[in-house]
Length: 383
Length: 169
Picture 1: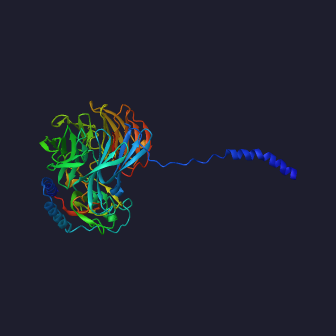
Picture 2 (picture 1 turned 45 degrees about the vertical axis):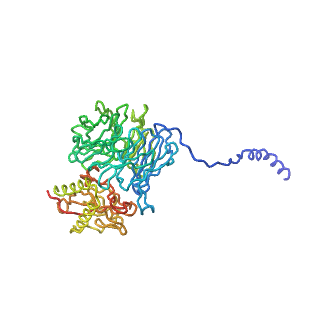
Picture 3 (picture 1 turned 30 degrees about the vertical axis):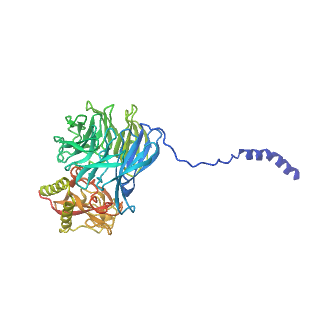
């Protein structure tokens, strides 16, 4: 018996030794650090989350369409307006806060975030007049040289504030005679949309003082076929889409805006049945001249319904290039669209169930779906 | 319908074109407060179901006829009713309007959508209906604005739907 134990011990010794040797070494001590952003990419997209179920806590998420990773977050307060500086280096957030979280004294403020660190660098206190409305590129907008920043006011009387983002000061307020929002063009020109279907254009000097104003001829009819206020930037100005799918291409490069003859996204048979709709109703690749629009089948009153398809157009020829249904990819209706401006562009589509889909913008191939990217992702911005 | 449209548009234009606005807001507030005292149609308040499950004739359903141009949370699901704000909130003195068809009596009604203010979003019974709704350059018909904007506390909680009268054909 004793010899049997001895044999067992001799036989098992190498096994025990091997087991001891197989135990990995302990993990090294770790160091707490702050992650640094990688170099800026044209495939970054800033996702504005209204957080509609808890609107005092809106956010902006930064998402990388190549690595499919969320890179960071910018706080955005209540009923927020957000835009990027012309050089893409700064995110400006105009937000409202309450002294005691959900109640108390109101403070309106523009906060500037350095997009290389996602840290807030400085702020400008605003009068309590900020337009509290759904996001568009024209709630808060920079001048082309980044020297001035314009903030839409609505109390509900309409006006806008002229800000100096570098100095951190409010330079003044310009009355807009009932016309709304701030559409920047030229060096220091701001246009606003009027109920009459006209554009009011106010020219400023470098100190933010008004030097001239002019009213355009009507370019749409608010009763028959209103335009969405979510204009889409082009090389020379902006495209505004109407509820029924008319395309109003407006050149803002001259002293006063000029209007190309409108054309339609839909055929005569489709008119009134297929229509654009969303919170962000389109995106344009400026160099390629391609227009992407979320489209759905629906009647009057469905202009906020998201798109079941993305329709693609050539802006120069007005030809439809493609129709990309999204349901077959497991996507719900598209409520916001953005396209990167590089030669290998990505098309980003946010949906009503908070998916963020990334497509090859040239061929329409789905590359990735990020689920639960936000609560209510209603606007996408990219540098 | 036309006369009410003109009234609301005129009010909005006037608001927008004046630089001294407090007195006008106060007047509009009195107008709407008075309007809220107009006789209301009887509504079914029996249901306690969530908006998604509530029957279309329930004021807790997004499909309820008065909600044809509402974008927000139903006060009926937040401690109030379709015509009353929840306890502890404040009603907005200014509003947008819709024109809604009541199939029960075959009439069209002008409906004032007032927000209830001063608390965080109710986050119950989120409805988004936009019949004849217009963008923000026509504020009297726009439901994207936070209509608590002229309140002392502008935080948005929920929305009520108050009949102002029969729309004239």
